[in-house]
Image 1 (spheres, helix red, strand yellow):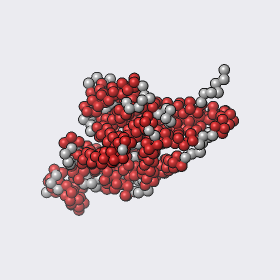
Image 2 (cartoon, rainbow, N blue to C red):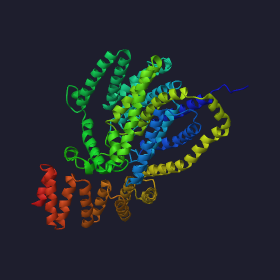
Image 3 (cartoon, helix red, strand yellow):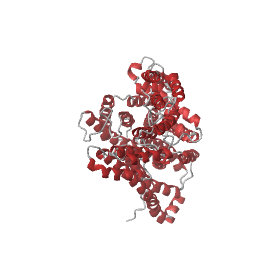
Image 4 (cartoon, helix red, strand yellow):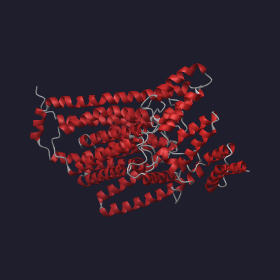
Length: 618
């Protein structure tokens, strides 16, 4: 029997879509309870592993390209390449290369995570068509249903994992109620809009209703406004765009109404206007400090930024004095809580601009599709675009969490895939395509697995190294206790394995130095801190660790040097100035004691720390 009638190209695209949707679902759902960072590191590791297959697929697609690329597709690919290459350059210029590569601990927003997301985006843009796009809706509904069910289980107090959780119970598989509510909101939007799509089965529409009810309950109980805001702004866009399809006048009226509501909501988040009681939350308004600090970072290092995912180490240097006076001198932030500002601040102008252009290109493609299609295809596009708009709304006030971001990049790639596919089909040459299939049969069978295997080998080495570090830190957290001296040798062994690992970021080595100190290895701990300060002199956390160690050694000179360096990196830390005043007094350095007290009184007058400083000076 001859099987030539099957369409291998269509089947290939369907397999690609299935794989990237599986990747998105698994990356979102995965966590590892035996990791020091149980949420972000396993998501990054899985993303990198799954991308090995994606790279092979992309190699095959571009090697066997049988259609002429549309102008918009060429532009988007060029922009994406500029984004990745610029991010790579910024990573190479990052003073802490490991953090720039794999991202800061508890975040993992380094070069590799964005490369992994970009590859998912690119394969989606090559594979998603109107014949398979409903799979995106279905994957979102299934993933959202699992997440919302787990969220309800957590709210009910029946979580099967005893998380060390300082937040509300509903953290789902993302480790934070804000992240969980934002992702649930995006997936709720996919479920809501799928009800309007006729080609989606009744079974999935019933599941969508379940998702909507359980997710809204989980979002409401979580106390996070983020998810509600995502839904609100997405619905405003959906209603406005749908109104334009009926009448230009109606569309303009709804757009003006939606714009007014959006402005009122924005003011409400800033504790102004009639919606302030409903929408205001201090965690939202505090973002102004984060944004302004990020803008200052960009202005300081416009070309390459302060370093990829290095916002946390520079926040104290660029924060406004009002922040520590209001929230505490030791309170900090590791992210700008705005994806666009974060990229400009940490990776520089070319990364930030290329990302902005990429976002605009996706929006342009979505609007163009709405103009070109009607009825069923119009509803499919409008739902995807509105959900993507909801994702972008949360990215204005939130951190780029991998579990959420993968859906934003996937939705964006899917919209471009729908746009590009129309041009591909119009330019399709059946004769050339058939010739390619015949002449390249061996290449088709071998290229994808060969490329994937070639990439898989170094990726496995990297991932296994990250696994070992994460697991070692988790074990150390459990066994490092001075009350159990029998664990002393084990602590030393695990600490040495982390400290000697090339993929362990400085904060993990910093933790190990504390573990060593607690178990009686004071000299070893001191050496770790000293080596870290020499290698990473701009890290305030490492300096504070060294200050503590020097204090136990009664080395006033070394403690003063560390605190003076900290004063440069954290100029609005009154607590540090107070301790410097104490050290200067102990070493009879009256001039520095007076000059330091003057600095403290200039911005912290009337605080308890200022009162303590006055008592020391008397």
